[in-house]
Image (spheres, rainbow, N blue to C red):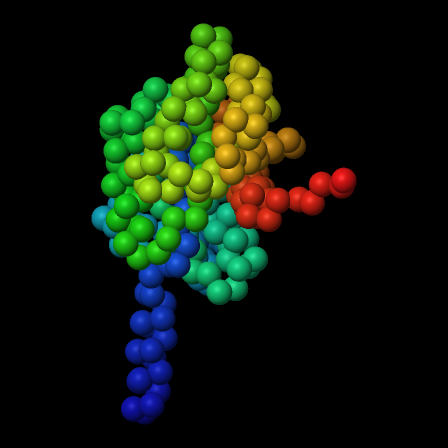
Length: 246
């Protein structure tokens, strides 16, 4: 009985051990997640954790975000974490949800509310592990022609400062395309596609074939899970660039 009790304590401690590799999730509602939560989304994933609103590490289950509690649902974070953990058996993956639905890129300027909140949360998480990457999905609020035309310049300025503030100037940044099901998104996606050529260690995550939940705005749950796997694939490509033939 004593041995069983000690083993139980050991397992419990292992379950709350801090992550080794931290990922910051920022942007607007499709990063926060609006997919319908189903039973499998509530099952903890081995070695994948999320930072709660009050800065505690808990098993990563959906919904992960808390920007709009009445709306949050399945996003790309949990499947991203699962895929990365499976690819790196010695990692404990920590996900830091900090996206906010409806936010425009200008609301992520250095010093803004969302930027500052994300910075505080990331720094708190980094006390336990090292920052390994940043996931970004945003742009639906910037699809007006004048905003889309300046998106690249504004994003470059924001992400450069964020990397500096986090002490990680070359940290991988994975940028997700907007859904191809919504009018106006076609003005922002070309801007997003330019970013990998202009920003070091930046990867574009395709949204091709991903469906909406019926509102022509938010990815459905299945699409979000696939999106997370694609974010993970982009991350791995940055870690190990493809060999180009000579």
